[in-house]
Image (tube, rainbow, N blue to C red; front, side, top):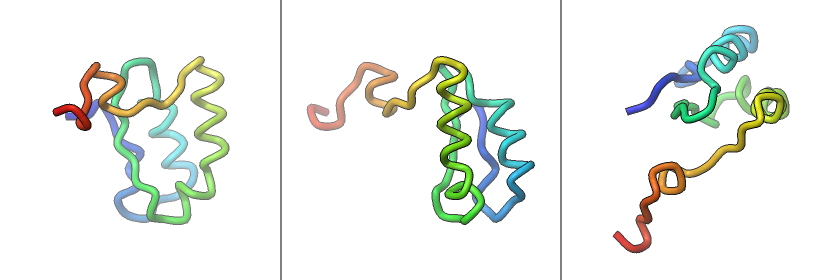
Length: 72
């Protein structure tokens, strides 16, 4: 389960993607995104800046939930 999405499973505009990022990128949120369309790749620096401005850092699901797939 996730809290929100960048809406980039299909090609969308930069304005739409940034709007969804602004809505969903927040502490503790799991935001689903894809790195397979030019829009998200072209906005990577802006997405990093949004996270930095909000004092956030991306982590894996294992880190967030305190689990480890390596151990099981």
